[in-house]
Length: 340
Ligand code: FES
Image 1 (cartoon, helix red, strand yellow):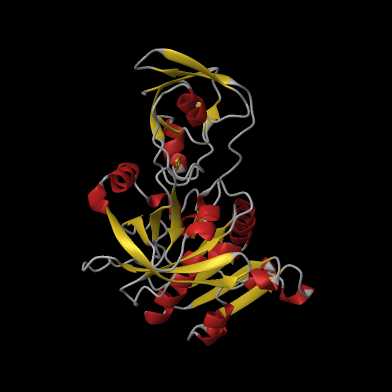
Image 2 (cartoon, protein in one colour; image 1 turned 180 degrees about the horizontal axis):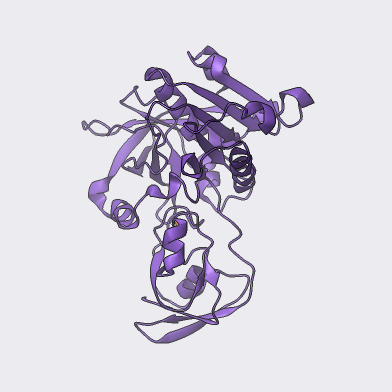
């Protein structure tokens, strides 16, 4: 899934951090059902583990899942938002997993109690009566499926496209085929016949000044889809994106990071992140997604010029250069002085 000039970056940092660390913002839920909805993708339904009701999750919301003591990951809620009482997540067993999705696939079982955060929405649907185009790449279908239900419920005019490499990797196809918006849905399979593949000239030909495009998927898909939406004439402020992966965390020149509170100086080599170097040297850092998506690790910059690689801050925020996502970003200056 989400990210610049977009709905994804609408999440405000301090609220996000508070939500993650404040126990009042977490809750225990029970896994009521797990089943596969595509190759390597499980659907997980969560119900309250206490007498309290679950807060509602608007279309596009996600929750923090406390996968283990050290791992928190963000997953979109993908059920019909009108169906309260449970949250449904869908999780791909990512071969490049840093532990989150793999642990879920290997250890989460029906009946287990899991801690999650309250739903937050940084990929909100703009319900202004304009036309919407939902563009999903693979597992990026999750927030958009919830949006499709919502748009259908409010009588919205929309199209829903899902692009996958192979048919077996297309989640929720049976459900969508039976949904009231089935006629609005188009499946595009890379390995299928050419005429069913996603073709921007054809599939985005009805874009007008009141069209909003919502895009979710891996970074490469988002880059492609954003460029296609621009080319089709979509207004910049109506392109909303959410990503499940960030840009390359490693690579680039080494630089020095200075922890201003202690005065310690550390070299960040090209193959490591600022956060990992700080942790290795006993400096406490707070991390969550470790992909530049959630904003948890944003740290005040006192001196130096960051090379922003996160997907959380807006372009305006990045241009201020006053905070840096230490899980993924690097430095354009030889030295970066942090308020840490
Ligand atoms: S830990 Fe999520 S943005 Fe850095």
